[in-house]
Structures are given as C-alpha cells and as structure tokens.
Length: 439
Image (tube, rainbow, N blue to C red):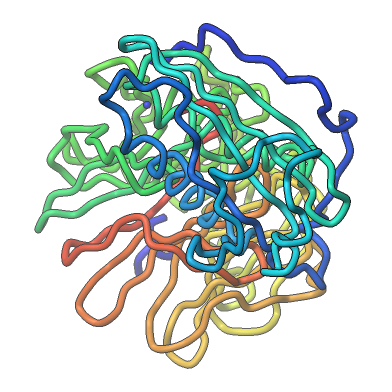
C-alpha cells in the first residue's frame, strides 16, 4: 500500500513615499469578505519625461506589466485601454487636473498613472494611485535603479498597491518548489509566483518527493532515493549539495517546519510502522509523537505550533486528524469521503486544506480544525492534489492532471481565479510555497 500519496541583483537606490499618501493601515478593499468582487482599475501608459531617444517602448511596457501582475492576484479587473475616454497624455497626474468623472464613466474605481525619467542606463520610475470615486490620491512611490531593473520596479509598484488597498503585501517575491518527473527520475524545480524564472534545484536524478521550505526561505527539506532508500535531505538555496539528515531503513518523509525553523515534523517507519516524529535539526534527535497500530503520516504544524494535523487510517480509511504538539488529545477532523490526505494548515490558522477522493477523482477541500465548514475548491474531470498555502493564506498552489498533461496551478482560497504556473506532459507534483523574500 502506498503511503497516502507520497507525500531566486536588484538594488533600489531610492525608495520613498511621496506627499499626499494615504494614512498608514487604511484598508480600502476587504478581499476576505464573502461578498468580495473584483475592483475595476485603470492603468495608463507611463509618461516618459526624458528618454534619450531609446526607451519609447517602456511607456506601454510598464502599464502592461503592472496590469498583468495585478490581474494575476485575482483581486482586480483591469480595464482595457481601448475603453479610456481620456487621452492620458492630455491630462496631468495631480488631482486638480485629472478628469475623474470620465474615468468613473468607464467603471474605474481606481486609477494608476506614472512617469519615467531616463539618464543613460539609469531610470527613475514614479507611480501614483488614485481613488476615482473620492477624487484623491491614495499613495505614490518613486524608485530609482537601472533600466534593466524595470521588472523588479513593476513588482514593487504592484506590492505597494496591494499593501495600501488590502492591508497585505503581494507575493511577487515568492517561489514555488515542485517535483518534476522525467521517466523514472525526478528532481525539484523552482518557479516564481508569476510563472517565470523556472530553475532546477536538485540534481539527484532519482526519485525525489515532498519538498518543504524552511520559515526563512533559505532551505528545503525533501525525500530522495539518492542512496537507494527514501531518506530525508536538507539543501540550502545557495549550496550545490544536500545533506542527509534522516536515513533510517524504510520510509522517511518530511513534514512541515516549526515556526522558528529549529525543528521539523517527519514520518518514519524506523520502528516498524509509519509513525510521526519531531526532529531537532541541530542535534538530529527524534521524539516520537504517535503510537498506533495504524499508519500515521503527513504531519503539518498549525501556525502557532500548538497543534499538528496529520493523516491516519486508524478508522479504516485515510482521514485527517489533529493532535496537540506532544501527541496527546487526538481528534478526527474529516468524516465525509473515504480517502482524505495531504493536509496543509493555513498561515491564518483558520482552515486546513487537503485532497479528498470524490467521484473517483481527487479534489481540493478546506475545512476548520473542528471538522466544520467543509468547502470544496475544485471539481470537474481533472484531478487536483497536494495543496500548499501562500504565506498570506489567500491562495493555494496545487498540482493538477488531466487531458494528457499535468500542471502546477494557483487558486484563490475561495476556489476562484485558477492560474497555471507550469504545464507539461511530464508529471509534476508536490508543490510547496516559499515564504516571502525567497525569489
């Protein structure tokens, strides 16, 4: 029996808020509301103040790239430039000379304008965000760097807009680790939140599975058959080699890290049966947490490290359970469906995501730790597996397969706005979302 589906040089030399910004902490959009609808935003081409004759294409590139980044969040409806009633070049970038009524007439509730100033290879980019309905500027940001840094500038602008409007920073500096299979071999690859910059992380050319990021984003633990046995390894983002940290004969699979990064949960069959352990990384000492005749796997810490979700077949089929961090007070969470596995605890602490078998296919669900408010996020003729939460708890990354292809996709926590990061005919699975700042 399988063990319940075996389980990235940029420096801104100047960055500051301009006069007239919104009061800190003011949130304009409650994106967690059950009645939330995408907010319409218009983004004009950035105006070039001085280009030296070489950078005309940057005008539309900045607006188009910013539109793309905001669009992929699932929170904004970017209005097409063809709908604009105003020639952005004919009006200024201050509240006194912007025709807010014309922007409101096309349904825009927010408006972004920007300037670009070139001096050789150096670039100063300025972005302003306006509230169309109130007719006021919400925030502004100016960044200075080289023209080659334009992508990072756009990501910073997108983060600023998200932070001011929603109270939470964006995820443009995060990456996804996942396993890509090439025949009988597999390795871990990394890909950025926007689906770019895919790169190889391991070169084991063996069976590799279950990557798990450290809380500081510097390390990934994973299982590999590099030495012929499913052992647990740890590898730094800045190292070419990986260190074996668990090598008991039999099954060894990593779970999640503790909040301070000093410990990891893991599954091992070293005592004859798959049980859950916690390991101190510095000393490599293990403490056993479960003692049951059944198979106990896939441990995931709650954000406060007070509880552990895991999977067990002690009731006759794989189901989700929760226990205290010392292994006491075990209680069952899932009762619907006869195969539920791969728990992932939301950073907000309110829900646990998992995959469950329904109508012969695996789909993604979320549920409260007390078993209430079960929500199915995916459906249809494809299978979805291995959910992993974003650092802000507003998205899930998952693997999908169907129609002869497999994908790594991102979906909002309400099941909307599914977006593909990677797609291919080779099997990809086990995605894991990095902390912020890991790209």
